[in-house]
Structures are given as C-alpha cells and as structure tokens.
Length: 189
Image (cartoon, rainbow, N blue to C red; front, side):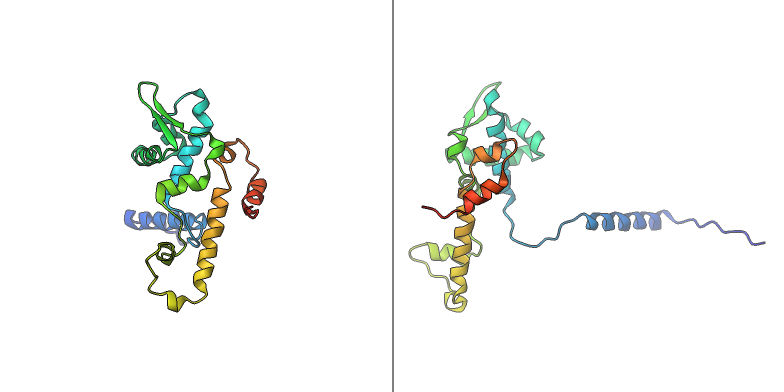
C-alpha cells in the first residue's frame, strides 16, 4: 500500500499564496476607478462642516473629536479648518472647551460654498479656467469645437447641484436625497 505523502510548503510559498488570496479578496470588494472624482480636501471639508453642524448645539466642536468620528487625519483637518475660518464659514473658539462653530446658519451655507472654499472652483477640464478669465484663451479652443460648450454645461450642472444642497440638509439625521436631487435640478429662477 502506498502512503499518502503529506505536502509541506515553504514559508515563502505560503506567504505568497496568502498575499495572492488577500489581493483577490480585496479586488472583489474594490470599486472600479472610473469617473470623475472630487478631491479629498473638498470631501473632507464637507465632512468637517457637516459634523460641526450636527454637534455644535452642545458648544464648540473640537477637531480631535471630528477626526475620530470621521477617521480623518487631525493635521489635515487643521489645515482645512484654517482655510474655512479665513473664508468666513467657521468661527474658532479658543480655550479648554474650544473648537469650531459655523459662522453662519447651516441653512445659508451650500455644499458648493464649502467645496470651493477648500479647493477652488470645479473645472471638469482645465481649459474652462482659461475661458473664464477675461484675457486668456485656451490654446486648444480651435481644436475642441463644440465640446467646449459641453464642458461649460457640465460645470454649470455641477455648480447648480452643489449650490442647491445646504449644509443643513446634509446634517439632518435622515436627509431625503430624492428631494435634494429634485431641488438641485430645478432651473434657477
């Protein structure tokens, strides 16, 4: 009778197999990297302001608390909060119980206000920056033809949407996203 031979694997081979299995598992749960993205700075600025809107009723909200709740680097939040403070959207309170408050009512601040204060304007393509200034002309303008109006329309749609959503709506416990989308998509009067 033949004995079954026990297979033993070397530690390096075993580690390589585990790494390969981990990568396959990770790929199964990773979303495709397609589409347009908002910068981390603009997203985190929005998280910061919405968190403050939710918790400021108890007093100034510390960045350390926000960093823990939102799982964001404290140093990065400090940079963002400084910019939003200078832009007039946040008010800093010094002292042992210090932190940040919204400088204006949440209903008067739009998501677009915060995202632009953190990152600047939203340009789906860089030539819109040249077209927006009075003196500059995009060097590719003659090559783009009618697509330049498409990109300008996309920028308008994005700005209309983000300007139509208030921090108050985002901070509500259960926002009605359908109403927010409908409100933001209504033509401006």
